Length: 229
View 1: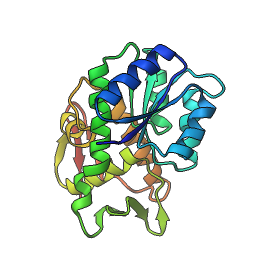
View 2: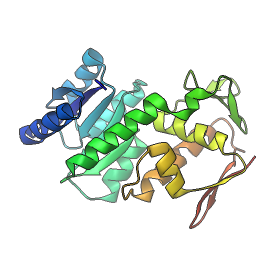
View 3: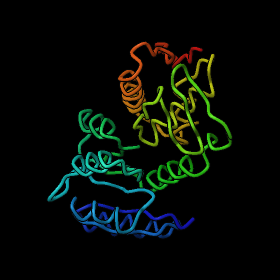
């Protein structure tokens, strides 16, 4: 596997725990102890994914996530938070984190989530399409991981791009929340449904800036989403 993981936490015991288990799982591990070091490490080491603690010295996890996404850095981010609060979870996702876990966490589950994120990144079915796909006014180019409305490029996170690609492949279908978590997130742990709501809300907002009449992702309460032609 040899994917590089950046572990960012100011608690040495957490860093040691993750370093040991991620190395054992076959990953290369890079460490950072504060937010500023985390940003430098992204540019120096080019990790595939970073495990990012919410509460950090110098720059907290939210600031780090916001800055990396502002610079369009495509590193995957799994956020850790010591607070079991909806605000922290939603905020991390709104700023472009791919996933989050609350401390204390299960190490096997964290490793499984990291593998799922990387698997979706490296072997997503969207790459098998040679030509563009389309959903309404959105044109999707799987190989380049680009999406456009007209001549305007959508600045999407990896997960947002995977979602719009998934919806484009399922036009005319009703897809349940469980199907989306399995097919796009790649795992079946008890995921907070708010995770999906935030990503879809952000996706609609970004498309809506260029096409206010885009209404192809219809919410079906209690079931999931109908992808209208």
